Length: 506
Image 1 (cartoon, helix red, strand yellow):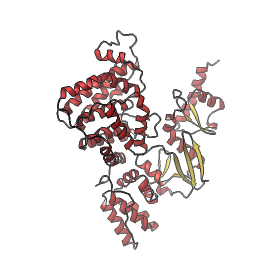
Image 2 (cartoon, rainbow, N blue to C red):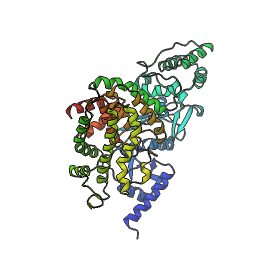
Image 3 (cartoon, rainbow, N blue to C red):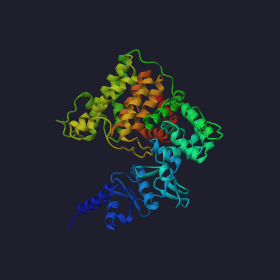
Image 4 (tube, one colour):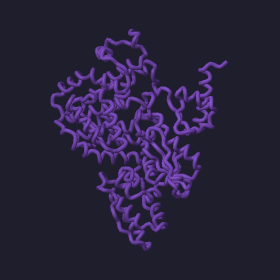
C-alpha cells in the first residue's frame, strides 16, 4: 500500500505534466478530485476562482501573495484562452505596457472580446478581470506574447485613449521610443482617416524629441488631403530627449524613470555635505556600525542571526570546521558572506573618497561584492560554484510585490545603462535614492539584491559625504511599501522621504 508521501509524489507528477505543457490556469477537470484535494491540502495548489486553480508553494504563509503575483499573467492568458478561445485581446493601454516591458500586476485587467458581458471576475488579492464587449483587432494588428493577446505596437498607439498620456506617460513615451519610423503608423492612420489621432501622435513624438517622425506624420496626412492639427497630449515636457530608436524598451523605461524622479529626490533630500576630507575617520565610523548594519540588513532578508554570531565572524573566532553549531548553516554562511562583502564595499568607498567616479567604481566592483556575499555558501556546499557566475539566468519575483522584475534577457541591457546613469549623475542625493531603487527594480541577481542594493546606497552616501545609514528591520514594512510605491505607482517621494528621515535619525 502506498505511503502518504508516495501518494503526494504521484499527485505532484500529474501537476508537473500540466506545467510542462504550459498550463498555469488549471481547471477542476484537468485533475482528478483525489489529486486536486491532495495537492491543495499540501499547499501545492490554490483555488483562484470556483473551478480554477494555480500552482502555489507550500512554504508560503497564509495570506502570502507572492505565488499569485508570480502566476498572474500566465493564469490570465490560460484562463482567457479557455474561456474565449482566440476572441479576446488586452486593452490597447495594457498592450503598450506589456510591449514596453512593464509587467506590473494591475488591480483590474481590461480585456476586449466580442463575447464579453461587461462582467468583473474577482481574483485573489484584490485583483480582477473585466471583460468588455468590443471589437478586437484583426490578426495583422495583433501580437501574441507569452500567451497574451495584444494590440500590435502601432495599433495600440493609435487606439489608446488620450487620457493614457496623462495617466501613464512612462509607458507611452517608452512605446513611442520603440518606433523607428512612421511607416506602420501612417498606413493605419491613412486607411482609417484618423486625422485627430495623427495630430496627437505627431505632438507626442515631438514631445520626446522625435521631430522627424512628427513631421513625417503631419506631412503625409496633409498630402493625402487631411487637415491635421498637431497637439501635445502629455501634461509636461519629456524629462529626456530620444534622438533615435531605442534598442530596448526596458532601457528607455529606467532612463525615463531616472530623469523624471531625480527632481523629486533632489527637492526632498537634504543637500550633500560634501565628500569627507578625513578618510580614516569616515571609514572608522563605517567600521563601528558594522555589527548593527549586518544584523538589520540580514534580518530584513529573513535570516536569523545574533549579534554574538556577527561579532564572532568579525573577530575571526568563528570557524565552521571547528564550530559544530555553525557548520553548513545558512544563517552563519550569510553572516560570513556579509562580513566579506562589507570589506569589499569599504575598499570601493575608499576609492570614491580618493576622488574616483562613484558610478564607475560600482560598475567595476559590484561583482566583487556579490561574489564575496555568497562565497562562504559555495564553500559550504549550500550553493553551486556556477551561482557566482553573474546576473540571473531566470525569472525572479519579489515577495508580496505587484512589480515583476524585467526578464533575464533585459538585465544584460539594463545593467550597463544603469551604471551609465550613475556615472552621469551629478547630484549625490539622486545617486543615493535612485541608485538603490533602480537596482532593486531591475533585480539583477537571483538572490541578495536587497543587500547589494543597500551596499550600493551607502556607497553613494559616501560619494556625497552623507553618513552610512542603517535601515532597521523594525521599519521593513515601511521600507518595502516605499519601494513598492516607486515600482508600481512610479512615485519616488515616499522612498526619498523615508531615506531622508532615516538618515537624520541614524
